[in-house]
Length: 68
Image (cartoon, rainbow, N blue to C red; front, side, top):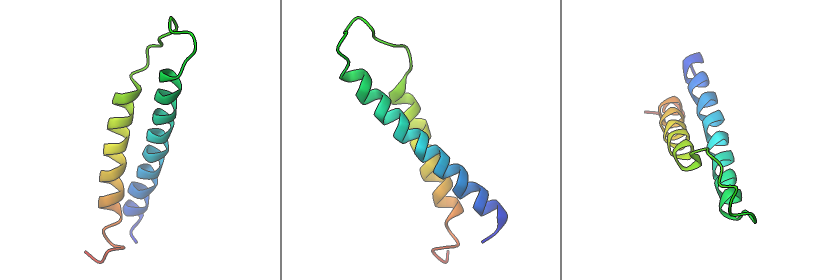
């Protein structure tokens, strides 16, 4: 595996963790007790871009594992 592929897979893993954190934060925001505390972070957009980046980076970086 080339060093650039390792960097892409590592960055993809970091983005996957960020997507997981955004999912948990959105779930926490939806289940809040005090409905007046709405928050301002766009967790759905953060999840979308982080997940998209994770899929692309892991897919491109992991192409050697698949033999492509």
